[in-house]
Amino acid sequence: MSPLIQMHQITKSYQLGKEDLMVVKWIDIEIHKGDFLSIMWQSGSGKSTLMNIIGMLDNPTTGEYYFNGRDVAHLTDDDQALIRRENIGFIFQNYNLLPRTSALNQVIMPLIYQNIGKQERTERALKALQKVGLADKINNLPNEMSGGQQQRVSIARALVTNPSIILADEPTGALDSKTGVEIMELLTELHKEGKTIVLITHEHEVDAYASRHILLRDGNIVN
Ligand SMILES: Nc1ncnc2c1ncn2[C@@H]1O[C@H](COP(=O)(O)OP(=O)(O)OP(=O)(O)O)[C@@H](O)[C@H]1O
Ligand SMILES: [Mg+2]
Image (tube, rainbow, N blue to C red; front, side):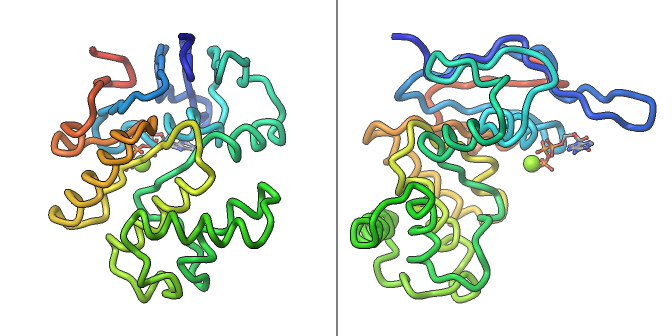
């Protein structure tokens, strides 16, 4: 089976004055359907940069990127956004929830972008919130929920479109260790149900949950 994601010799450089800072260095990554892949990389090194490239929120400086066999490195932003909406769910360290929006409406939002009808999107959002254990918090605003609950909302939001892949950037980074374990157990359960998950982290405890591992050092793959 051809890989869901194939990246070849990816680099990302930022310009700092006259100098180029190369953060991601000549990376090859293959991600297959059903993977629970962890990419471990130390803090401040380029994890979010790499996740943004995988999620098509940013483009690599050089290299090839194929998503489902399609060359996506050279598409317009709009075409990338279309692929992203249909295929990718994001989980961020700081949840990225809208401040004045209920849990239910946060989860409904991506379905509005997909032009799903009102009844279906409400049903699907409720089901996703139930799945992450938040059936009793659907009307709560982010500031009326704990960090762990907010991250569950963001997981429900990532799941509700039934994406091909879920990308998680330090999903437990803002949580205490007990809540972090609960979130990782939830992701593990989703993987067992067949979801493809890519996790980017600097923590061994988080990395341990994945079933395949890539270790980066100085922007290069170590193993
Ligand atoms: N837009 C940008 N312009 C210039 N430099 C940038 C930009 N974005 C990131 N960087 C630099 O790239 C490096 C990696 O940043 P990135 O946020 O990807 O790291 P990270 O591993 O996610 O960090 P953290 O562990 O703090 O989340 C840093 O040195 C950062 O200063
Ligand atoms: Mg980061």
